Every structure is written in structure tokens, then in C-alpha cells.
Image (cartoon, rainbow, N blue to C red; front, side, top):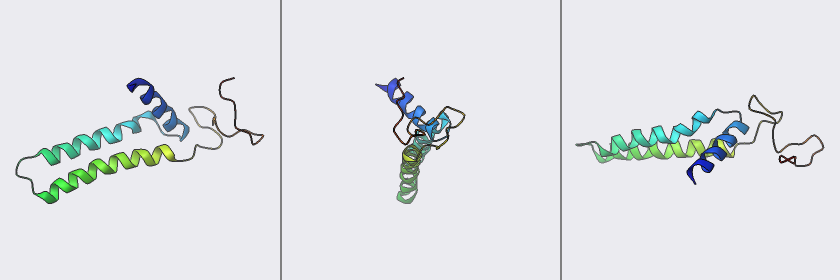
Length: 93
């Protein structure tokens, strides 16, 4: 289940013109937030900052995934949704 999820997410990022490395944003922010939250002798305010960092990484990735595809295609290929006739393109031809 993990590999298909990763491939679909990377393809969606490519549709919006972004590299697949954007998938690492939540991973990096999760690690950073976990280090802050798990630190010894850290006040509650700093733990909330760590949680906010983790949430921000997830929301940033979701925002990148729901953005509209580039209309004319990009370096990763043509836009699979828009078709010159106004119909949805059949991407499985």
C-alpha cells in the first residue's frame, strides 16, 4: 500500500510542476517537531511550537496536492486533465 501511495502522490506533485522531493516536507517537519516535543526540560510553549511545525508540514503538502495542474503541461509531461476539445483526456490510450 505504501509504494502505490507514494507513486500517486509524486505523480500529483509532478502534475502541479513540483518535484517529488516535496513529499519529504512532512517527513522533515515531523522529525523536527518530534525532536522539539521529545526534548527534556522543554516548556509547554515550545512543545506547542513543535506540534505546530508538524501540522504546518502536513498542511503544506496537502496544499501542494490540491492545487490545479499546470494548464499546458510541464517538464514532467502533458496535463492529463485538460484536453484541447474541452473534454477530459483519456490518459489510458
